[in-house]
Each structure stands twice: as structure tokens, then as C-alpha cells.
Length: 210
Image 1: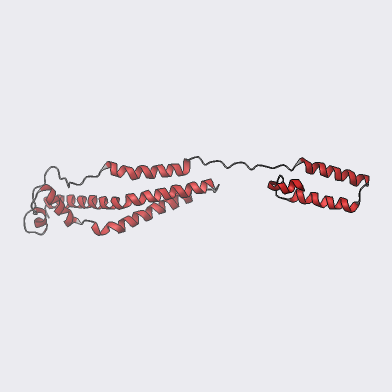
Image 2: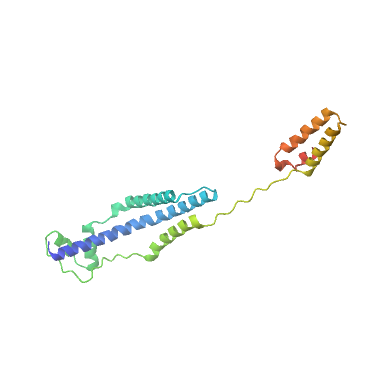
């Protein structure tokens, strides 16, 4: 193996890695977007319910979710991954070497001279890569930093003043012993029944009649 073969093998390996990374990113980007939306919805829901979210546990769960998405993406496109021979064919096509690399790798011809710049022709579109990255960052930040709407304070409904007046009248009658004890006891039971009911029912038509 001469110097030219070593350099060409290195360029082929690099081209194969870039090719495989492109396929993986194409599958992982939408999966990561879905994971980000799911993380945002889940975390924000728990925060609105007042549940504590331990930092270590949250980080572990979120990292695992993205890890599973990465593995799913790899499994989905691994059949399209290129090996070193495939990468040499791509280099031959882009550099117009007319199968010189393939023939040299098989020992048929000598390795061609290595140009000063070896371009595999693969380009990553920054806008295509930025979109899922921005979505992921935004979802994670909003999930933990977006203010949670405060729950409305519970309204305490005071008992009607009529109940207090009725209680005072009953106490006066009981102290003066001028009324039938049985009737007073019956009135006391009715008053306690009104006090025991749901406060929302204090001002219902039925309660007002009572």
C-alpha cells in the first residue's frame, strides 16, 4: 500500500461518514422535533399541576427520549449507509476519475495522483439543519421557563346572616324558657342542617325558603 492509496482510502472513509451522517440526520430531525413537542407538553402539564420535577430525573428521561429517537433513526436508514467502496464510486463520479479508484483498489491499475482538494460533492443545508435545532431548543426552554398560569384562589362563601340571627333568637328563647322545648329542638335541628349543607347551596331558592 503506497501513500496515494492511504490518502484515497482516508478520503473515501470521510466521504462515507458524511454520507451516512446525512441519511441519519434526515431521519432523526423530524423524530427529534416530535420528541421536543412531547417533552414540552409533558413537562408543562406537570408544572401546571404543581408536580415537582427533579432536575436529575428530568434530564435522564429527556436524554433517554432523544437517545431512543436517535436509535430509531439509525435503524430506519442503516440499509442506505455507504461503505468505503460506495464512497470511492461517489468520489470517482464527482471528480470524474472514470473508475480509477475502484480499479486501483482491486489492484488492476495504479492509484491516481491525489489532487490538492478532494471534494465529495456532499453539501449540508444549514437552514434544513437549523429548523429542528431551533425547535428543540425552544421547546426545552419553554417547557421549563414558560410561566405557569396561577390557579384562581378559592372563594369562601360566608353563611347568610339570617342563620346567625336565627341562632341568636333560639339561644334567647332557650335561655328564657318561654317556648316549647320540642319546637325549639326541631328548629335547632333545621338550623344545623342548613349550616351543614354545601356553602354553594346557602343562597339557593330552597335554602332561602327554609
